Length: 265
Ligand SMILES: Nc1ncnc2c1ncn2[C@@H]1O[C@H](COP(=O)(O)OP(=O)(O)O)[C@@H](O)[C@H]1O
Ligand SMILES: [Mg+2]
Ligand SMILES: [Zn+2]
Image (cartoon, rainbow, N blue to C red):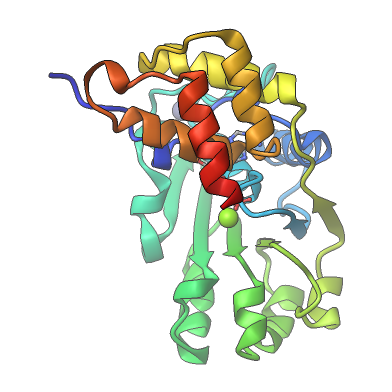
């Protein structure tokens, strides 16, 4: 029996699979191109706000993956899919960050899950650990408001100003975040959901790729609507279908109606 796809850990690895978010994508693609062609040495600090599961973290990961890919396609800006950076799961790197060596240029990416920060010293250690590296350095402060809740975001004011890193922060909402901290991010975006059609098309591609049968293309649209066009919520439903046994492992209208009722309830 072949292994089931790990849908909960799926992450777009091509720009076309990252749907919606046109401005965020365009911005990261421009930064990617400028960094990879050496036009700039440090990316612009960027803040991405938006609904839970709307693609904040996955878009930043895609950007980081492209930045580290040894054979990035400079036309499409898609990563090659087979170099070491492309085949390593970013989330398995944890506190060591992710490192890639590209013909004389180093790229270092450190994703920080702000929920996991134990305190001020822990945060300081992670940030200063990057100082040992040369080249392009990117730190993701994922769910930065988790630091704000604990009064830790002020610690960032100095580093955000003085260190030669590209900082990227994400958050569901901004109101708890220190205004001075937010001001250190000149590029600010809010995620934009895909249309129902865009989401249904992605679901169709993924169902085919993962061998999950669906009864009718209309079911894909129904799932997109039931998820309020939030990609990560639709993928949750697909993951539930994926885990079913035998013929029940199929995306049917009945399954989507059940999912919709459970979401509402
Ligand atoms: N716009 C999108 N395009 C493609 N996949 C997405 C998109 N938004 C979310 N996903 C997928 O849904 C899941 C949750 O997305 P994530 O980026 O973690 O959301 P957020 O950080 O906004 O809470 C991930 O598996 C991700 O790959
Ligand atoms: Mg996230
Ligand atoms: Zn690659």
